[in-house]
Amino acid sequence: MFQALLLGLASSIVNFSGVDLTIPHPKGYCLPSGNAELTAQQFAAADSGSVTKLTLVNCDPRLTFEDYLNVKVPAHAVDLTMNRPEFLELMRKTFASAGFSEFVKSGKAQSAVEGHYRAVGAKDAKVAGGLVPRKIDETCGYLGGDMTVTSGGQTKSMTAAACMTSIGGRIMSLYAIKPKGDNGSYESLFVELRQWAQSIEKTASASGRSKPGR
Image (cartoon, rainbow, N blue to C red):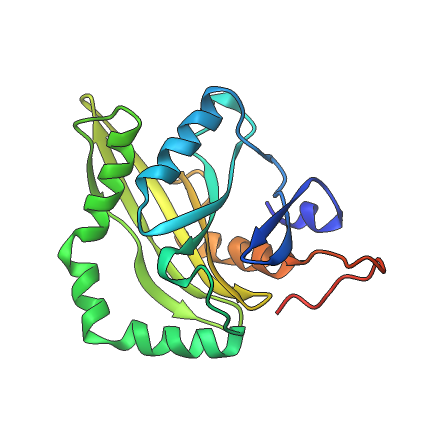
């Protein structure tokens, strides 16, 4: 999914507290427009724990908010500077901590996602399942899992994955949400998110040279 973008398709320049990063758009994903843009803004506003820096949706309008990508920054880390090795070491400790394990089991994350759906009109939304810590490599700390969203008597099954990383000294999380079974499991999304993260770099300086991304 992502490999075609690495050769120079559409991209967005996004500012992360004074650091401009160029984020390529994966093939088949577009910036939301019209009603989709409003929905993206409502989703972002409902997420009080994060600042949404970029939303990309499937270019097929039938799949707009069933297949989408987000780049988010934890609200408490907007101005924090940390290189990738330091951040991933922190993630190793966090994943292993009892407090993080308790949070995952608490259902608070599901409640937060329900709030996002209710903010866009799904007042009876119920969420089951969700993101669980899976592994860490040299690029990302990964969360992944399957989840269902029930609203209006209908249930949708989705696969979700996240890559938590640092690029240009700025902490961020890249999210992918897809219909379950559409493109494999969350493990396959990890590969795609890793490639996406590796394609993001500091925006080229006035000299025309791209600055190092880490």
